[in-house]
Length: 294
Figure (cartoon, rainbow, N blue to C red):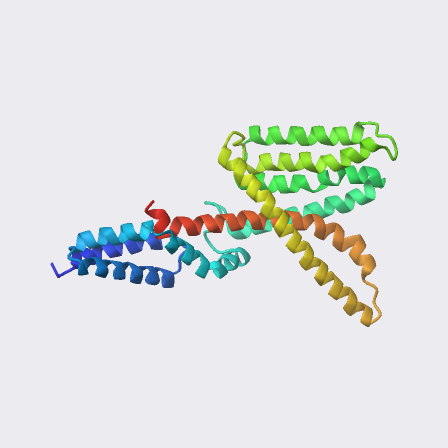
């Protein structure tokens, strides 16, 4: 057998293991292999044989948290490319990522249609305020129900409280301009947020990890939604200013059509972005040498 043939075979097996995850490009695999070979050469210089040098080098790479942090920092731009371009492997097994994007956009449009229809059919401002959350949050919960592949039992445990809340908000005899109606309008989004959180954990109500994931998700959802809202506001303002130059009044269209669709739809899109970002981060962590050797 040629000198170092067994070492090369071990490196090839390690390389194949790393390449199985699509989150790491071939160029990144080459970079990691170069780093591994440097570690092996350093160990061989101290007198270790090929097998011992390989094992120590792998262990050293696995124990250095800085390797994972540096890899994530230098490749953070790819994270957003993966989110925007919807790469292969970002969806669940058996689920096309483009299909997921189509589902998200359909739910976003559905939320907009519900809000637009609510403004026409409900009419009364106080009643619309109470029901506004009911016109949007079920679409976010529906995304998680589709994403988590809910069983009928889990789905029923969510549909029942949603329906009960809708019945209370619409059948209770609220006094016109009363404080009770205002309190109901303020607390309904909180209850709907909790129900959406139950959808997010996918029926695993007792899992501490899933509950903490929902806390993270809630914070990131608020940030993403704010960023989408600010970006949309700037785009709308520029559009209005441009059209006013040519004498066109676009404001009625914005108030009657753009905002009723964009505001609720952005919540669904923001929920998808947070979920997609978390998936890409988990894939990147699982594929890093430091993670795989822990």
